[in-house]
Image 1: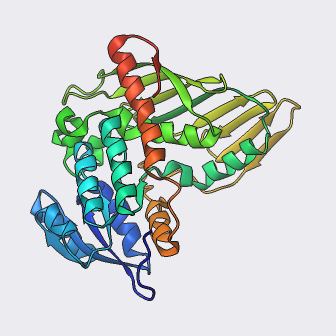
Image 2 (image 1 turned 135 degrees about the vertical axis):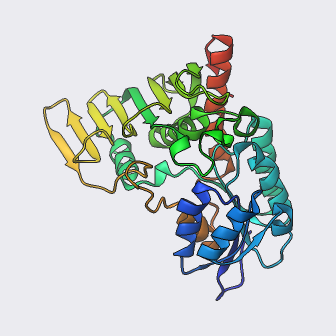
Length: 348
């Protein structure tokens, strides 16, 4: 499906040269011995030039010229959210393998078209949901799947920080706060990460959502900056998902699963990333790698670029594929619909 000539590096082009491209994708790809960075494209030419000077390759002013190049095998789409779908679809049609940032699209229609285009053109499509790749989450899933806390009853998950204005290359005047380009605020930046994590972690669909998705903390822009959602899983378990751009100082990036035999804590203890409290009185503590974070310069290896390149090298479809991205997006779309209509929404 995606086999490349053996013995040569995978040639990658990056579309978008902002903070996520610089601090995550380009940094990780440049350290991968199986990768050659060929080109950067950005609507602000100077940004692409800066990245090319730092990470290698050339700068291109128009992304359409980047995907037209024969010397590029794979593309990373790291632009404003509204452009994810059209660029990804065009890149797939141009014969490129694609790693697209989250949220993958602005609608279910777009997401399905991305998936269908990948299948039709025989190319991999991976979505940049990195939380399921964190060692703490991998360990927690192993414990949960082994039945350590019994039947899942309730859960809560949160991803909150001070907002992207302190981290993004454009600050508070950037696309993150512009609905026309961002489509959604804190729920697209943070909530979709936790939606994907929950779906993967508990191994079942979220089928119903009720939510408040509000702009209450950031007077600039026109997108949500705080959201609190009530979720129902297919099994009947219920829980909450919180996304916030007004958690200052620090971050809240934790998840707790409450079961019939105990409680599984992930990212809530300062000393141990994974903690299990059993109803028998036994407590278990696990030392694992911590979750990727924007707090305190924590942009360590997310595992996303590595997983994408490994999928290409082994000609194995990526686990975090378009359908996985679509399922996470569906939870966000349901949350937005619930907030708008003040009703419980079934997830499609």
